Structures are given as C-alpha cells and as structure tokens.
Length: 243
Image 1 (cartoon, rainbow, N blue to C red):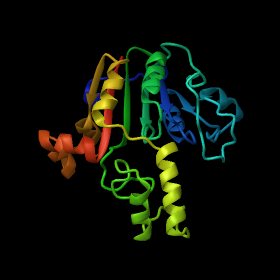
Image 2 (cartoon, rainbow, N blue to C red):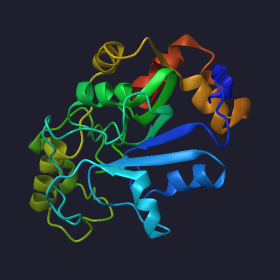
Image 3 (tube, rainbow, N blue to C red):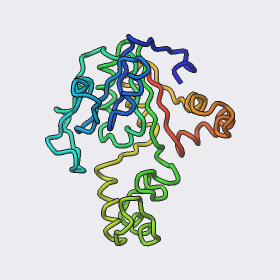
Image 4 (cartoon, rainbow, N blue to C red):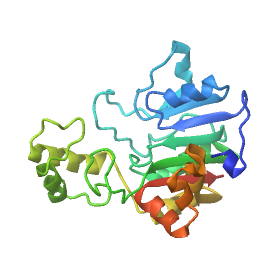
C-alpha cells in the first residue's frame, strides 16, 4: 500500500507503530523484516518473545486486569507513551471500530508521527451487512436492544455466545455496542482526521491492490466511483493519512 502511494520505509531506521497491537504479532512481523517496530495497547496484552522487548510496547493503563472486558480510558490518561515526532509510519488493523473517542486517537497518533509521516488505518465499515464481532446483520448501524433480540431469537450468535439464551445474548450485544465498538459515519471520521492531518484520503484501491492486485473482483470494481463509495461504507474503511 505504501509503494502504491509512492511512500517507502527504510529497513533498520524507519520507526513503525502498530496502534492497537493486541498480542504484538504484527510488531514482531515488522521487526523480523528489519524495521524498528513498536506497539501500543490500552491493556497489557502483548506476548513478549523476551523480557527486554517490554520497552517496545507502550500501554495506556486502565487500572484493570487484562481479563476484565471493560477498558475505559479517560482523556487525561489517554496518551501514547512515545515522544513527539517519533514514528515514520503508523498503522492499525481492525482497531478504530473499538475506539470511543476518534478525535483524541487522531490527535495522539498525529503527535507521535513525524512531519511528512503517514498512517494507514483499516477497519470495518459502519454499514457492513454482517457486523464482524457480534455477527448481527447491520449491527454497526442499528444498535438497539429490540434489534439484537430479534437476531438472537433467530439463532445469531458469535463464537462466545453459543449456549446463551436469546435475552442474555441480546443484553450482551447491546452492552458491547455501547462500550466495545463505535461506528461513526464516514464523513464524521474524515472530518475528525482532517483536524490533525494535512492529507486525508480513502485508499480502498491501494488496499485491494496491496492484498490481491486487480485479479480480485473487488479490485476491478474499485475503478468504478460508485463501487468505491459502496466499498468504504459497506465493506472496509481504509484511511490514508499524511502529517
């Protein structure tokens, strides 16, 4: 994707941040390929290969253990623990749909990114036909208890809900929709990003090109403006940001 956008990193010197790194898998993938990679999470989730790697993972501590599924971080505590203008490239995969304050997230990622540096964020679109965490149809856009109860009664469950009664499943999904995911409209996401980045663009073509090339049907269809709009609203949002 970077090459498609005429942007390049240098092995050994370019600093990379995985924003919302989870267990740190992507951080190690970049490090194995010679990049100076780091990770950021709001909970102590990274699985370290060795103890000294701890310095490569920054946390916004929540004061709660990692197995508690409530990770609320106040604005005063939400700070990526790296210095200003530190990274050449920041990326996230399936992270921004969990962020509760996108303006604050964009502000912090822009702060630690070098002038001229770029960021790429990919995450599910608000109107994706099947919300990818709860598996509820249009669960990113319609987040009411009756809607969740309807689909729970019809047997819709994710892998953690197989034995739940419909009412309990609907309650869990409704709570999760209020505390664990957030899908602002695309225009609102772009507006928040533009407050902190010089260039803001939807890069769906670069995403499909980088993953599959134009061999894929989606790659071919993305040359059509109508499908490009559909893709960013009903499939995957791919943000390309430049400071």
